[in-house]
Image 1 (spheres, helix red, strand yellow):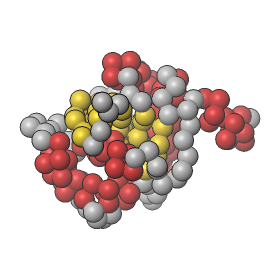
Image 2 (cartoon, one colour; image 1 turned 120 degrees about the vertical axis):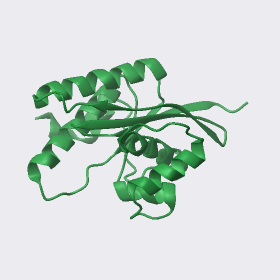
Image 3 (cartoon, helix red, strand yellow; image 1 turned 45 degrees about the horizontal axis):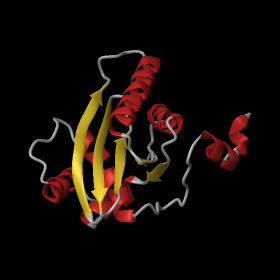
Length: 183
């Protein structure tokens, strides 16, 4: 009997955070959860980060993922937007590490290529491939949820070998690999 692996995928954001959770058993994957956390009703950025952390902890405690796959920030022209996105990603990763869930980062291009075969695919193309692959009946209003799911499915396709080659099993291994971040 094949062992099960649960993967939580996150599309970080401070306006909408998308997530998807899949279960892998052998060569089969099954959708466990798909959703989005809408944060635009909160004006305070710190409150948004707190809510992201709390929702991540809730998802981890409910589904007990073995691994977190998260979309790495892309480079944009608006520095303030990049900082906010990086904070959202950091908070999601911190929540995973606080529960000893290892994380893996994938570039948006790698995720799109993994799902559609084209690194420049549109969000709609990615969503349509996931709908067919996982037989999704109802998708959320925005495509942030399917972007989070795409990160999880990309990780499944990579079989735990992310492009960065970096895997952290907890705070201790993260800090051991990143001593400059201590101070």
